[in-house]
Image (cartoon, rainbow, N blue to C red):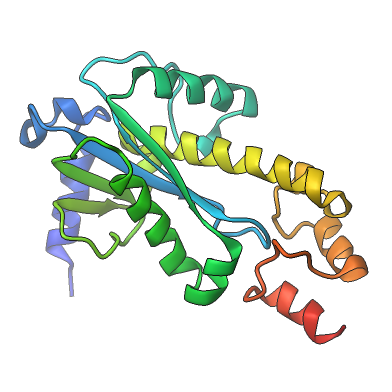
Amino acid sequence: MTDKPARAERSLFADLSKNVSDWPQHTHQRVAGTDEAGRGPLAGAVFAAAVILPARYDLPGLTDSKKLSAVRRALLYDLIQQQALAWAITQVSAAEIDQINIFRASLLAMHRAVDALGVKADFVYVDGTHCPPWNRPGAALVKGDSRLDCIAAASVLAKVARDRDMLRLHAEFPLYGFDRHKGYPTPVHLAALEQYGPCMEHRRSYAPVAKCLAHR
């Protein structure tokens, strides 16, 4: 059975500018984008950001944060905060992730970010397939961080904030190499986890951490 509405939606978005202020249905509206960073790592919080961009801005090279170098992300991080009508960065801790699972934690982080904007958004675009459980106009957009500048801006803020937080954790727990792998399950991280066991910032609901705990 053909999914005609979904196909029509993909076609609609494909024909529109990345700048939502150019979209006819969003003229004169404050449109926010939100995205998260840190679903895959074994340690640390999951971060999210929300951004409302003005009609005119200068953010050279803005796209999905994963496609940018660390230097470019750092530059855009400052520019976004300088030029955005509103922005917010929030997080959900490793302990909270273990309580509610990473899917709900990611949605919660984005919910918190939008709530923290300080400016009411008329519409919110969420990167991914699901919106948080809220009562506000919005839509989920798959690969939105490559398709909408407001989501791309949010992805940059969330990614840089999380990477910097992992440097903080590295200073506190230097044995694990958080400064290099940012908590992702690299061979170096897995070897350190096996040798030293989890620290208090490891996500105990994640399989490699749970397996390590079971064997100690």
